[in-house]
Image (cartoon, rainbow, N blue to C red; front, side, top):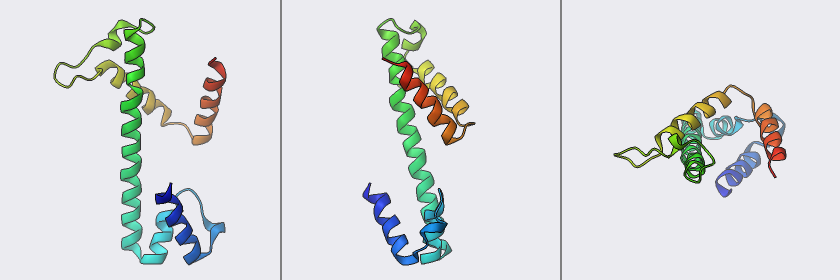
Length: 122
């Protein structure tokens, strides 16, 4: 939290233009404060952080279909393990396809899907 809050606070203190802020403004603010080099590095760091977040999410959530299949609540094919890496191959592929399909939607649409899924579970 501090890695987002402190740069945002410092940028607002240096620029004072909170009305101009939008979803990708932090690299723009870094460019205004420290030049285009700092802005480019901050944008690169944000891309790497988002890729790492997606990677950890995909790896964590692929274990759910695997565990459900082991308990008999999902098709048995999801329990197949890769012989070399020990990973649930089908669960990773299916989860990746679902994430790719979700990439076509806006954040507002995804939040609506999330809310409906949360409402439908006990």
